[in-house]
Amino acid sequence: MISLLLQKEYEKAYVFRMKINFSEPKIYTGGVDVSRWSTLSRKEQKEALDKRWYVYYSFRNPKTGKMVRQGRIKGGANTFRTKKERYQFLAILRNNLHQLLAMGFNPYEDNSELIQKLEGDHPQKKEPSKAKKNKVDAIKVKPSSPKNPRTTKQKTADAGMEIHEALEYGLKIKRDTLAASGFGKYKNHITRFQKWLRSERPDLKGIREIDKKTVVTYLNSMLGTSSSRNRNNSRTNLSSLFTTLENNEIIEENFIKKINVLKTKPRRNKTYTTEHLEKLEVYMKENDPLLLLFIQFISYNMLRPIEVCRLRVKDIDMRDKKLFIRAKNKPVKIKIIPDILLSKLPDLSVMQPDHFLFTPYGFGEPWDLKEVDRRNYFSRRFKKIKDIFNLGDEYGLYSYRHTNIGMIYLEMSKTMTPMEVKSKLMLITGHTTLTALEKYLHDIDAELPKDYSNYLDPTFYNKETPGKK
Image 1 (cartoon, rainbow, N blue to C red):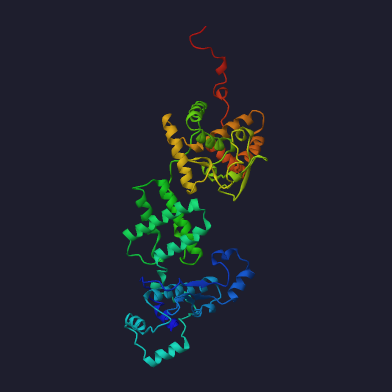
Image 2 (cartoon, one colour):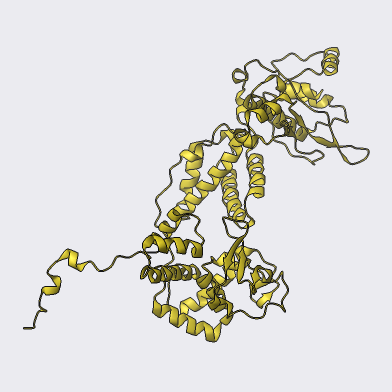
């Protein structure tokens, strides 16, 4: 019976919510992840296609109250010999199955009323007799499995999965691949887009109804209340999500990649002058020594503020002078602890290994807060001190890292060649490539030329000072 109902729903999509007694229908794809299809070998692809692909779901048994796996639904999908054709066909069956379940289909009950409703939605078709229905149910008529699926796509089928269901599906995948700190911001951009769609484009139902013009309109609307940088970030995150949907055959193409990126004014942390460093250090030594030690981890170990916030007591090896950090580009990264910093650390042996080094309650205490919020706490704490010295937004905790890397570079340059300096500096800063280090040094203006007055005027030093004989 369910195959017949899917056949009738092949041309129509419904959005209807009710109490959920069923699991979300899923597609079995031969035991492989189709989003990684292009990375599989031909042998692995062939082995996957040789297996039976199908849609499966579970439904709550009214007697036991437990979810029970129902029969597999193939619908002729395995007659297609390519991954794209087979998955597209099963995706339609999966979506329509979900809609049927939402409308009230129950494999444990009589669905005659639902059949009548579906027949009523297609008045141009003559209602089959009861005998014919029974015959169809008995032989499990398969949904039309066309020889050429490209010629049988219906307009309603092109709308694809319901918009917000598709976006949530993409977010679910991203949640497993992004770090917790990055996923929060990522989700905020997608949620904002969802709210805009509900408010401004309620006429759109299926994910494939969203086009380039719709997304451009949304991104342009952000410029009135936000910056071009935030607009570009939203474009990047939406594009990433739509790429995931494309890889999972939910949409045909990620068109957001073709939307232009707006030019933005670079925002950078300025380096501190020697005078700034001295005044800030004197003030914090007297008024906030914990924050000073926090900044010394940034300055002497060239860490990012969020990396310092991740540090726990167990991450410091006092004996071998090693520091174990979780950087953004590696699960675990090892750095040495210079003696200038080692001498400033308290006795760690009396502290709990899992406690954080830096907390509002002191050094080596428990602190149940997300790492982004921990970083923001110390940023706000430093801002109070920074405001005392009238330092603007261009100065921050990150400025200490830039300042000290620049100082080390200039000091090394006095006795080493540029290539020798950069080779040693890579080990200190943690940059993985020479190109990345050179770009960083350029951005913080660490590489400055010597005075070139003599090139401008060869007689510069021979001129007499005006007013003197």
